[in-house]
Amino acid sequence: MKRFQKVIVSLLLLIFLLSVLSACAGPRLIVGSTGRQGVVKFIWDDDDEQGLIKCDVAQNGALSNCRNIKVELKE
Image 1 (cartoon, rainbow, N blue to C red):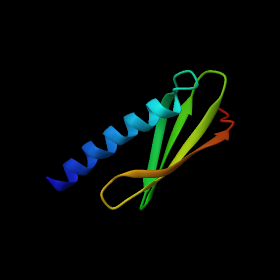
Image 2: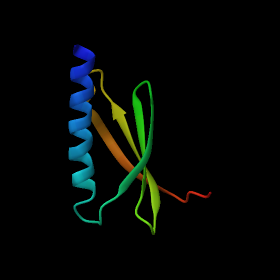
Image 3: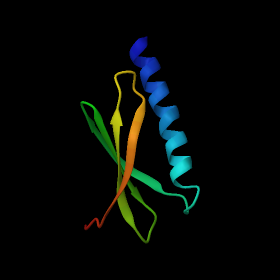
């Protein structure tokens, strides 16, 4: 049950983070994510640009120290 609560908290924090990051820019479509112990990365695409959002994950699932990293994704 605690794991489920951590997932819910993480998803709510992700939604909040994405809404804050997209407030000054157009909406970004998250096309993928990856995570490992203590770090999660979200890949976003808005037709003109692509990038990564890299966040630290606390023990309770909270995201912190999120930063936008611009990259160019190639097919």
